[in-house]
Image (cartoon, rainbow over all chains, first blue to last red; front, side, top):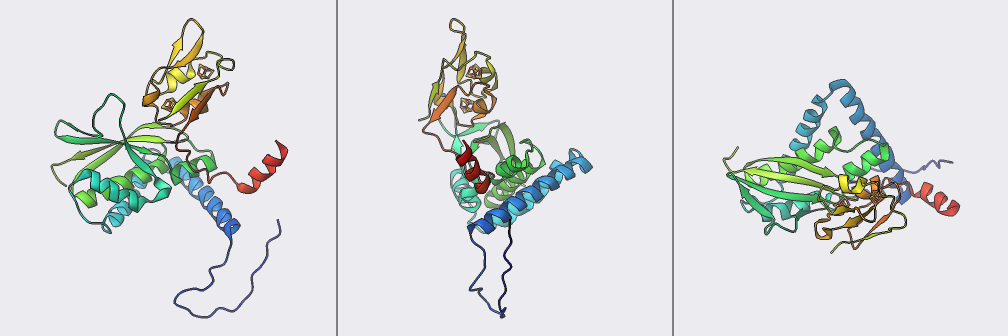
Length: 182
Length: 83
Ligand code: SF4
Ligand code: SF4
């Protein structure tokens, strides 16, 4: 494919008037990034084995704590999840989920609060499919870390996220909150 | 609510969907040797069953279809012309 070189004048400016690129350029960049991130993840796994999950989890958690600082603190889990879904945006579109036989989305279990989250849209899943990598690998830990970090920041508690099931169209995760604090 | 349709002509009765579905939405109809939907209300539209079914025998209606940005639009348009 022919690549067109763009020539012009560059002036110092606070807000760029022209960022360049149309939707095809953005798509190409997205696919290059997906391939890059995918290969980085599998290389990390090759070098560090299962330790790769922990590294990526920590990175995600740090991002989650940063993002969580942008929203108001609350101890209402439903409100926290609503705010988190705004932070995560449409690229990580999730909803609370429960089996038909269960009355409430949020349940209490041995002093812990448990809620199941169904992630319908996920950039990580798309990246894995773009690069032919299986789900539940290190890259998925980025989102787990991110969610846990953000919940911890917003609610000032300790949380963990477990994967129940991964599918090509949606993934189910269980978020467990320990109220004993950090 | 999710609606699942099984094409009984296509289903080869391998039972993979019964085994794979995390929410026990399917059961084997031993008489017919085909799968049947028994707990549609518990389907969360993960579509693992679609991925595993060798006969592409099921259809899910009224579900959130996840974005598929990983599909290259140029490749897709070439395939659309070919198929
Ligand atoms: S989409 Fe998922 S939950 Fe629904 S029937 Fe298929 S495997 Fe089961
Ligand atoms: S996986 Fe497909 S072919 Fe096998 S039992 Fe289920 S519907 Fe039938």
